Image: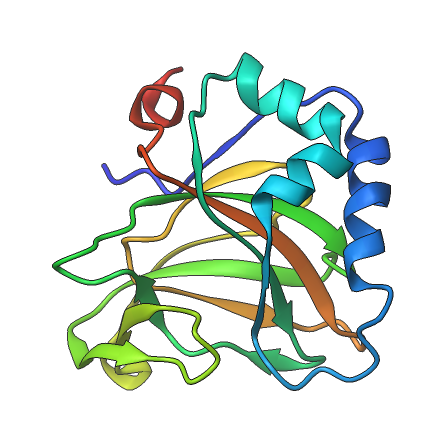
Length: 180
């Protein structure tokens, strides 16, 4: 059976989340899907987060982003990375307006290979939603490792913009993701 997520227990979630929120204070208009964050500065600004990541032995951060989903919208069905640079697991951290939103996973065939977002999000594959078979859904309400190699999307049923902090690591955290 395919695994879609794993909830992680972090100390100081409220402190870390409040410090993460300072990264979106200047965002007045949502016009892109992802804001890249300088992860070195982030770990200096939020030592509580660095300490927790170290305790879980995550290793180095490949990329840190704030993912943005506009009100009452659904993101494109996609997988992160591509065949040359596959991505499998992300740590998603809910920041703001994450209730009434769901991450959903599907079984589907690639419709657009190696799609690259103009804003520099990276390369990913897109899928035809009309031919996709729904597998599972989860409301991400606490720090959670999520499967980003299985085709997935996000539905924001909230009347406000959803903000989710997301980290990709240089070394995939398989042991942690698969541990019971």
